[in-house]
Amino acid sequence: MYLKSIEIQGFKSFANKIVFEFHNGITGIVGPNGSGKSNVADAVRWVLGEQKVKQLRSSSMQDVIFSGTEMRKPQGFAYVAITLDNSDHHLSIDYDQVTVSRRVYRSGESEYMINGSACRLKDINELFYDTGIGKEGYSIIGQGQIDKILSGKPEERRELFDEAAGIVKFKRRKAIAQKKLEDEKQNLVRVSDILSELE
Ligand code: ATP
Image 1 (cartoon, rainbow, N blue to C red):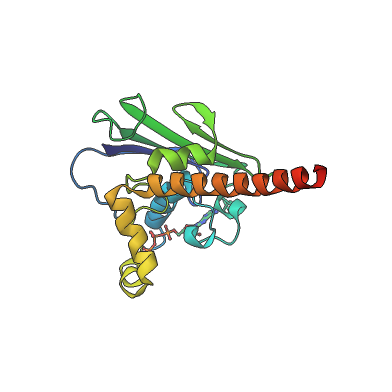
Image 2: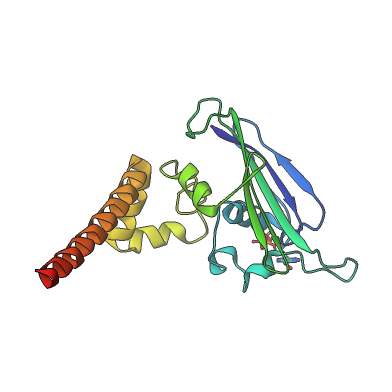
């Protein structure tokens, strides 16, 4: 699996539609200060479902939409799509190529898609669990992140190893099952209360 392309339109400094094509091997993005290099990484974080504006170096979610310049009007929406080669079926989905996209309008309305079908953020999170790609993954190492990992709490460091070991989805399923068990226990207590009132 590898990242084949990133399409960006109306996101941060990218007013016009732009498509970055990647091939196997290393690709570098170079440019003067402030030209938008980090915005490309932000676009990938955003399409993977990042909800924290701080992580996107913005002050609000609408802030990611191109805000205009002296020469250009602001855009009405931001759109990012990433396409991954999945011919090794590393992602558990029945397609050799997977495109994940996200669009947000100034009104706050937003949509996520997987291969052109509307989906929930939850579906995107589940698609990328244990692959290292998701927003909690380690495929994007931001400035200062290495220091944060080294000086972070052991539990936070553990999360990174869990993701690499591929056990995050099992931990999440365990948490959901435990919650259901707890709910059922409460229901049983209520039933036995009612039964004792009737006796
Ligand atoms: P450096 O090399 O200094 O780290 P960079 O190439 O990584 O810079 P970025 O931080 O990606 O640059 O881009 C910053 C530019 O993006 C700024 O010029 C800023 O005005 C522009 N920008 C950020 N958000 C928006 C937005 N919503 N609309 C228009 N332009 C934006």
